[in-house]
Image 1: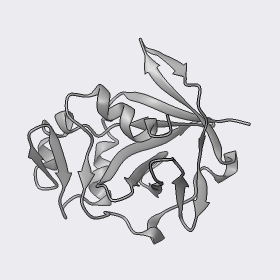
Image 2: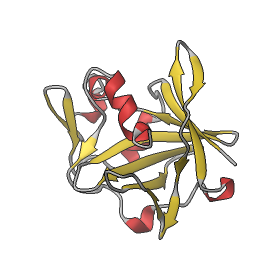
Image 3: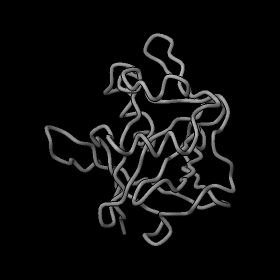
Image 4: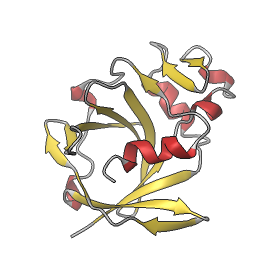
Length: 167
């Protein structure tokens, strides 16, 4: 279930989320945005237009300017980078895998996650120099900058996942 934050969205889409082989953001770009709420969070998936709470709790352990989610299959490293207003970009990586990207914003204490699906990015003309496409997959190029992520917040995809603090 801990991998739900990174993988459940991908499985719901025709294709997957934006990835890169190298990190777009450095450790120094990260902010520990979850710290005021503790380190344990309950994940919720959107099901039939309503939020459905999942049974597992996801623990985000702060390390430097990023978080680690420990899982028996390996750690997931999560870095949050400020964009504009309430928006953040989440850069996440499972050990020895490509980096995945999602948009995030707070609604009260809940952190709502919006996908950056390849299917939708393919239709966005402003991303043509920032993303390459191969089949259902997409990869960020050196043209995928913080400004490009900020541009995507103007018309985000529907949120399908959120996390809320859990005691």
